[in-house]
Image (cartoon, rainbow, N blue to C red):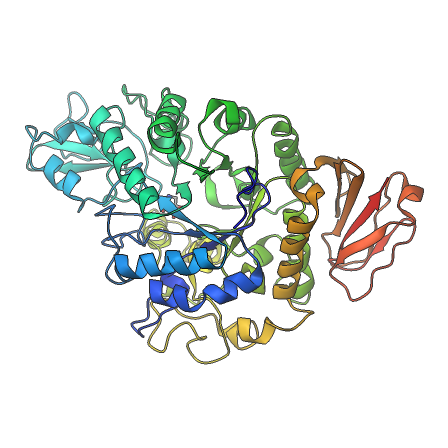
Length: 568
Ligand code: NOJ
């Protein structure tokens, strides 16, 4: 574990979704002891930081993103003793742990909400967003919700509470009531909890939908563009006090602690200009944000289920804009997938004939951008989307609710299913593929969600030790970041922005320039590199085919990616 002040810029983060990673006790659900058993695998991969999706006590309505106690461990996952053991095992191997911080909302079973719900006189009533019915409408009647906002998981964002006659706000499931950050006692309680985890030894936080914590207290209706519900996001995304709240959190939680803790804010809808403000080190908010632009390019105006083909030109334009926008101030996080997104190789690559080549290409392109890369469990094996046969195969609340409401609204069930197959979050949540055994080495019991049948071919046991594997390629891109300062610190320049199949860019730092060339297609394609002669004698430092061919007007094979280096 290096204590270099810039360690988080040279680091690669690995995300674990504990429910699906490794099950040590055969109950079909991953757990902390399962992770402990696999820490050496992560050390062998070479990652620096582990981000743990939520492991706190939770009714699991949204697989742990509905927390009922911030300062304990969900019994299905283990206990605080197991957690401390994991932390030690990770630290002993020179890695760090970042916790998921879910404080836009709690579970409705959290004691804070139980208190709040007990009645309008509860001292914690104001810790959540309670409102009467819309003026002139009977409480509880359809359409009487205080605003017209839709929730992210289908249906209205308000739940009626018959005992008090009021509604509470839930941007996600009705079991995830939104905390009212206007109330200073809420903020104090959250900061105290964060300090408790840092005192225990954790190394930072990934902050769930953190740009939604400041709402416009007037709670205006949103525009209705599709269906009957309104889009409230302009009134709760990057709201009026968001920068104030994050600066206060920084001062109350992070200032004065030795070393540098890693903070990354998940921020749907964030713009480049906002991201500069959030990540400018001088403003003391967060180190980096997860932006969503590049994972929205294959969706239409009606949202994630409204499928559109992805065009490489759009992907390059988007990621290129983020690189340029955060070049002087701020810092990027880099990701293709996570527990909310389909599998990278199925979405951006080719999960058929060129699965291995395209998985390696995606690693090369992403990790060579300027920013901190994130690997989602299984991505390093080239894991793919799952072959869901029918609606009953899905487990995720978002998918289950969407199927039910879309079909009830008259949409064709087959088209709804087709969209779910491509976009459901469950694609990312099938068990980690450790080996070819029936439970994929994930569990000796019945996994909570079906194992992808392709685990007999795609698994860690088959790849570790094989120098041609996707896993070995991930080891190589991580090692390159650690060894070559231009990867972490170099300037980024996009090349060939109008080429529809080649993704090309340079990174420049001091006397070193790296050239990255990638062919996002199943046909051979020429990459007409500008100043080609300057690259004639360059060294090929990384490629995804057995032998590179550093010639003029480089001809790239299907899904080929190369990294060249030259020193002035
Ligand atoms: C974002 C998380 O990544 C997602 O999994 C979750 O459902 C929502 N926030 C609500 O916490």
